[in-house]
Image 1: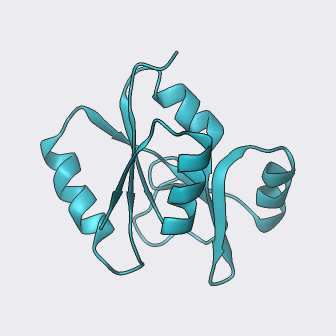
Image 2 (image 1 turned 60 degrees about the vertical axis):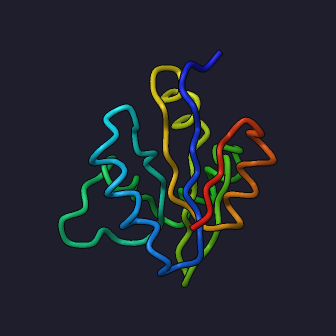
Length: 120
């Protein structure tokens, strides 16, 4: 049984989700950010397992086949997804925040109805 809550911040691309989330995370030490997997290349300053889990397209497809994602989507030729293991492991001890697109948020709601969804 999980002790933490799952909170999903969602909205259209460019609406300011990351800006709002950054401010909230600075003031709320009881929240932990969920690290997603992606097939895109790291940007300068991004770190593995901090910003994303960076994987190849082939690895991501294999993870889909093994049903490892709570939700995933493709944007501009790259995949992004929330790992089930990330949710299960981290909500055992903390409140977890996801920053995902609206389609993914609705998929989370279907699989994890107790999640709190916030649309910006």
